[in-house]
Length: 276
Image (cartoon, rainbow, N blue to C red; front, side, top):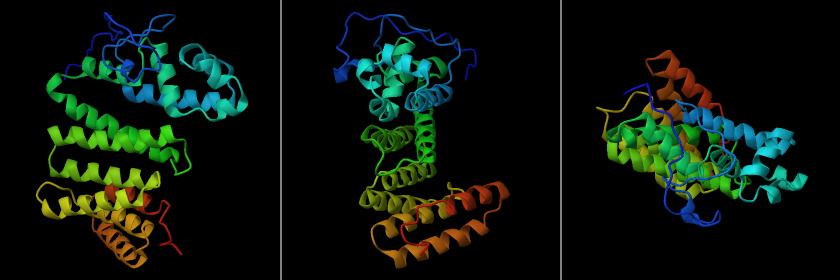
């Protein structure tokens, strides 16, 4: 992979969409006006962090962040006019404002252009699989719950599905299992336990059917997700059994760093009644 990427700019095109048109956010769209060009070697992870910081700043009433959303979001004046509106700003709103600040009609347009500038086309599926997976776990770490704004819940669940779709094109059974695990955890976070249970079972089935490509930490993660999903759907007995299996397999992991990650995840709520 060439690390000397060319500067990413919003490409000029021959047509425009209204800001509220769902078709506006695609890979060749451009937002004109007072924009700030992206740096020569943009990093999507840093941009995602900037969007989260922007949302946090608006919710806290930071003047510069409020001004950014007011100036660049299509509904900026409405979103920032009141304290209640600022407190309800979603991550998607912040992403849209940040993307338009850099000259793109929306977040997906920015992401696609950054991706194309950083990797060869043959690696695009892997790049998107990794980036979307990282975004999902970042959002889960931020504390997405069933009470979170719908846009934020959509980001984490749809991001997990999108990551799985890209891994289908470029990964192996281990990547597929890990993608199923992410979907299960995302579905639990947004309050869809039945969906979580279906994908947690797929995750474990993939791990058990492919010991030649999965790592020793894949099985405890699979049992962890299934334990949570079973408990969330009311089967505490089965959930407890899978949790105990996850703990036992974690202790058997060869690498201390992997064990530490697993132990941290196993100590993290919610467990949907298994701690009672």
